[in-house]
Image (cartoon, rainbow, N blue to C red; front, side, top):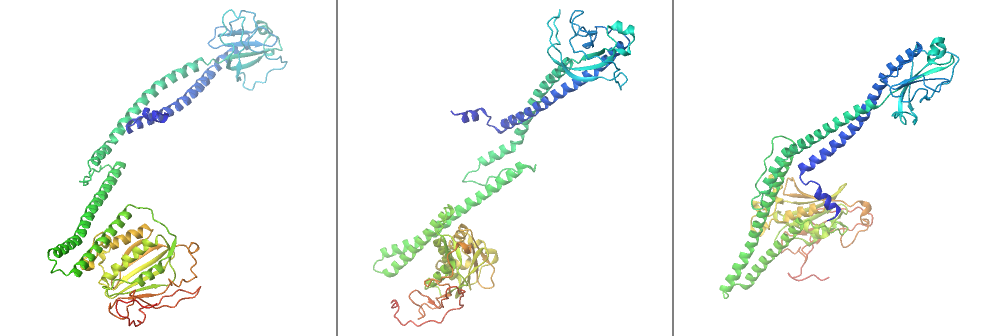
Length: 562
């Protein structure tokens, strides 16, 4: 087990525990920061209060000295009075009198002065600063104040302002300066701070436990709808995807989650229904040609002497081709549904592809005329095979429903190429404009087996358009049906040189006439061509309408001479 796995095992797995631990850790960090700030602030405020309280003893000591009286050693605050020219203190007490009489003073003495001290505060002025009390080893009892730095209040008294008797009582000379020190002890501030720290610690631990417990149970209550959603979702099966979760009426994020899950389940249900319908339709479409093929073969085998074998073979071949086309369409749809990567073979001219498909024409049993109209080469990215399949499906669909003419138009727009396939048939109702792109959907006019197809051409065409970043829609038209394809256009700086016209695929108007299969207009490839090639740099234009037919007197079924 590595370190990462060990940490994951130690870390709680449930959302409740993780949230409680996270909140507790965050609150603990906040409480520590607040406690640190309170500790220092309480200590500072307590020290300031102790210093303010030491001001009164300092002024009282100064008043006694100005009256020539020696202060009593019994004092609530440590103090020491030193004078110029004296080795021993004038007076001391409150802990500073730990030395025998006549011992040197602890705190420094001021220098002498022959002039009065300038005291603007009328005897109430003092100085506040920090002073290190020296250590002393000659004390009879231990000197606990030595060796530390304390806040000190001090004030000066000039001995010249005292009478001779007062100076004699204090033992100072006329030019001496007496300096009164009052040491501010931190014990009170430390004791107060310690008590506050203890209270904060207990309150913080209690608050931390309370917040963790509240967080744990709050998250537990908040996740009850999620657990209900999980239970309901777990009961959804592929066989019965109609189960839905209960949407809470609270309007918070859980409501949005339940709504999203219901929407997802609805989409899955619809997808499963489409899949079942697709399988049923595919089975039905496969069963029809198989039944016809099997019936014709069984009849031929049962009555071989009465069977028209060429007709039976033709029927079998026709049904086999139908099965083959249906299998290819199903395989292509499976590939498109699997979202396999698109093979980009570079850029190619969509207009030239449209002309080539028009040149190839339509089957002889469909009496329609194909025309292609373009103004310039239209370069797009993608697989030419996919685009050919897309256009062929559109042309076959239009030829199947057209009365006599199908027109293909290719235009260059700013960011895309627009191709439209327009037939002069009965058209498609507006309410059916999206339904025609569903799989195995054939409108009532197209239900016949000979004309209706399998209902996969338009769905495959739209899937191929989406696969190449385009769109395929049915746009309103006054006559017939008009399908419009939009494919992203190749920028001019990334496409091949469009000024050179290839003679094998000129950008011209092509016409394939199927109005009369037996007409001498028909050639071997069932198409005629009328165009005038444009020179390099010329504008590519397209002629409209069918070109005059040329007479072909060769016998049917023979190939023209080169």
